[in-house]
Length: 204
Image 1 (spheres, one colour):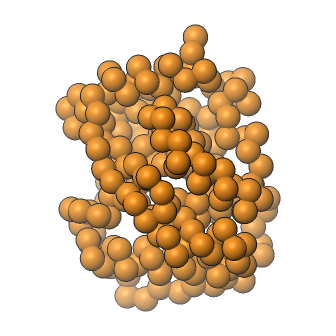
Image 2 (tube, helix red, strand yellow; image 1 turned 45 degrees about the vertical axis):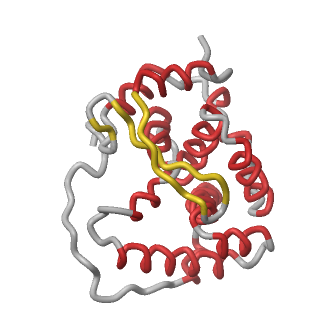
């Protein structure tokens, strides 16, 4: 909707989950790259998945590993009262990029991770992201806001202000120091916005 996404929902487990990796062969180039964007997220959440990516294992194998990781994590924290929030890595900024630029979800998530790491000076995480981008052969030009003449910074920050993970004047961020090392922190929205605005791509 124009107001945002994930505004309504209910908690129900599926009776069965089917994984059809043959479906991947039907994806066009845009959705193929978008799907890899979500894989990158799991490469930070799991050191095992990170190794699959770095070793350039078949995408089908990585996709199944990602699905199994998510199923196990959700089973442990069904109502997102703990570690399930780790699945939001890259999504806080990603959803804002997706809204402001009408990007495929996975591409926006990759941008969300890139700018989060750079704005907060997470050099190791940024290095790991670059390694996985190279291993998955993902073109990086589309991950820069300067590549989009229609980028509206005001619209971007307006969406960020509405993020469901924002509590009062603070924004909750999922961070990582490397594969399997994930944490959650809160930062005043004004401070985070200031950090983003110091980034060369956001400077006026």
